[in-house]
Image 1 (cartoon, one colour):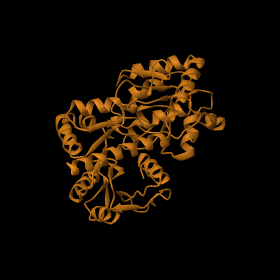
Image 2 (spheres, rainbow, N blue to C red):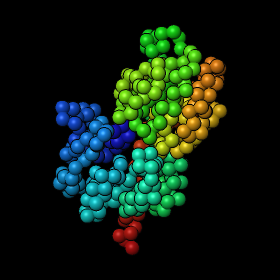
Image 3 (cartoon, rainbow, N blue to C red):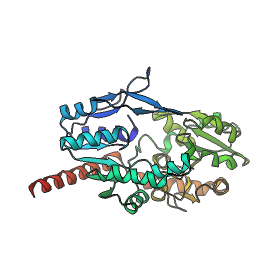
Image 4 (cartoon, one colour):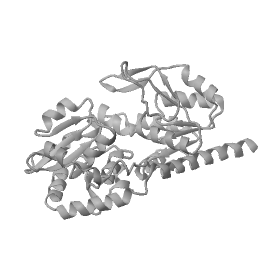
Length: 359
């Protein structure tokens, strides 16, 4: 299960609710996620062409059959495209309200992968989200974009972070010696390695003396990035406590993608006590307080990223101050608090449906 969906399901179970998750089946040979707190129904899927790590659901009667059998009060569309659109259509046929989460900057992806198509992407977004009872935007920037482009019934719903798992105390000096044997400052990136993430912007950082770039994640851009980032250490995909240990062992966290509707890895870095460098666009605008928890830089500007790293590398006291402030900022952003907000959104949608029926 995707991380946010997993945390949401856990919270709903903890609060006495009975969720069921419908998701694309994992790749053949991959075992289903044993940590799921509720039933998970898998529908047939295929790998996304050129990006086999992502599975795309195929049409299946299992989705509608699951809704008929489970009789939910609300259908939560974790990502209302492909499988989510089918879920929305099935919910509409059954008269069940649907709440959609806006997670992907589809318009930004259109610009990245096709060089055009932004207007068409927004038409698709309006069509899909406009059919839902409520759309939940993860950041102020996403909320503004949706409203500006005519998407109705939009509310803010951010993400939580596990501050027990991601914490400064997991810093591992043995790991640091392995990653930076000459005592280099470790600048880390965590996330998918795909064109829209623009990880190549760290190329200038690789040229800084006394700095080691560490990349965590996988994706179709990895072979090219291994060439573009000389001297960088690529650790592949990591999860759970292992990922938390790596986060805490960085000195600086640098994110490069300008199309983030939120950016969960920034919150996890802040929970780990790290100063953050991120583009001044999208979700990071809500997360990074420039000059207090990190540095915001112009999007797509490799020189600005390099200069931001250089300034933090030269000032250990500033890194410590930013990291401590970041940790304090996220300590109240628990998944329980965010999950209760979500239940409140469900309650408003259900109340609105009852009022409409009564009228």
